Amino acid sequence: MKLVKIVLGGMLVAALAVPAAFAAEKDITKSRVPAGDLEKAKAAKSPVDLNAADVIARGKAIFAGKGACFSCHGDTGKGDGIAAAGMEPAPRNFTNAQFNKLRTPGEMMWVLKNGSPNTPMIAVIPAQITEAEGWDVIAYERSLGGK
Ligand code: HEC
Image 1 (spheres, rainbow, N blue to C red):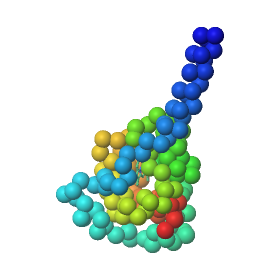
Image 2 (image 1 turned 90 degrees about the horizontal axis):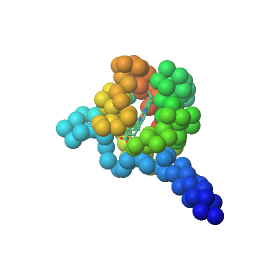
Image 3 (image 1 turned 30 degrees about the horizontal axis):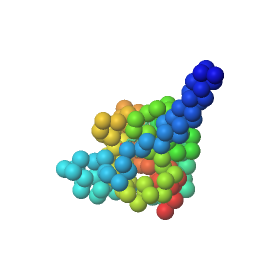
């Protein structure tokens, strides 16, 4: 009887732990850009049209390929990639429409170049992708959340 209770207890813990592992995004209302860099980051303009279908398609290929963004952000950008289980904070869920309202493309570019401080999101430009590829992948990520 005691054993059954332990097993049931274990199952309950596991059932609660799974959604929590993917739910813990750090407060998305706060920019990841330090105050001193924020104005400049926000003003950065993409050289390509972030709404253009060909740009978004290029970005998708980088997200799923060379950039390996999918490994944390998930195949569909929900923040539930294979490497994301238990990750603290959780990778950004780009399908959350709120995110596009809270963040400019320029702030996202700052994160691609500098990483999000004190999180598993490390700088990917120039180590992994070029700046031009960065704008393409930003276009793709923003396309997931709608307007
Ligand atoms: C090792 C896992 C990992 C990989 C790989 C990864 N990310 Fe992230 N990413 C994260 C995490 C974790 C966060 C959340 C950081 C935070 O809350 O500040 C994040 C957040 C972001 C953000 C949001 C920053 C903000 O302002 O809130 C952007 C944009 C982003 N990632 C883009 C990318 C792109 C593009 C790639 C691929 C080139 C990529 N990430 C690859 C883990 C990853």
